[in-house]
Image (cartoon, rainbow, N blue to C red; front, side, top):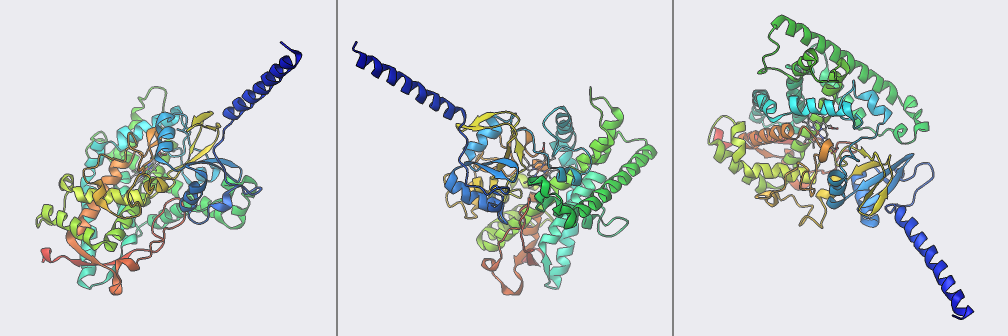
Length: 504
Ligand code: HEM
């Protein structure tokens, strides 16, 4: 071999070595694409008032996996069904924690499930919530509570229908879901009247939970919350809620002592169930403390009230915008109800179109459009990209539900697409629409939420014909969502109920 050839081979060898090394390092660190960022704010300024919509626009440019920086927080944004499946199914355990923001801890009283890091405490609390509180048998046992509250609602609507008055459906539905959850949790209502102005406090609690908190993202700017009064409002609501729960728990303990029959499972509310678990104290290596009880109840109010009324509010909005769909769901309800005084939960199994209306509503308007954030607990590869441990994960369920690669005419309200469709929202097999999240941390309140939404909507359309005030048409409705964690309507939905001719 000539000297020239020898040097050429050495040169090629070194060149190849360098390239392979570079390739390997690139492979080793292949982060998802990122939009450019500003100093300190990172990408925070790009979220706007409607983060789910803004993030969807960014995803159109940067892809269904994007890495953002929200102030100090590295955040992965997931915007496709495939990426969500990989995260919540293939690598479920790695993404089963939640980021802890100090402000959430301050608002959510006690030590509950929603913000608990993945681990033994969460596992025990989750198992109590799923197997003792939200299991189907228990959800069904509250059928009478739902039916009684619906009867009250129908009575109210009949009264305003006699006077052709418009009703604030947003307000009425929010009160209804709050009353149902209150009775299920405490065995009685704590409304606007009486000793506790529970509804007002709950509204403030939801407002604070929903509000933008700069200290979450840029801790050294946390002082802003002192200046603008948010911290004192948080403290006031948290103290109020804490004292309220103490009082309700003490009353329950006293009543159980008096009754001495606290073991009768039949009429037990959630608090009774939790107190019984605490008394029996037979979970190996785990004791349910008062703080755990408070946390569970606080979670159920935070996660279960506004989310459910939001579905109903959007479902009624879309029905008012689509008179043919309204007619179809009314015909189904009236055929099945057949002149009875109300639709019962036994009737729901036969109401396929009504179920499709609810599912289509959840696809288009997931109440938590960005679900609840998750946190990666170790380095992992998703869709070929490297995601480091400690990354906050935001899943854009709103974008997935409207993805044109999955759905025909994705922005159209068309319940027929779900008739005879195998898609459920359990997040086991189908990730095309995931309003309840998926995997280990998926929503344990799915059955509770579905049966409540279905029975309320069924009765609203069964008993009444609906129109908009002052001769407005559905197309006049303002469809702007609220900003915040829960995307309800920005403008309250007001409508006129008239008792259907079928019931005269
Ligand atoms: C339409 C109504 C509802 C929607 C859309 C909804 C949605 C969600 C979502 C997206 C999550 C996070 C899931 C994830 O990280 O993958 C969640 C968690 C949760 N939901 Fe719901 N939810 C609803 C109703 C309810 C109800 C009625 C209850 C209880 C009565 C409830 C209790 C909870 C709890 C306790 C968690 C935390 C679970 C955990 O972190 O392990 N939800 N929900």
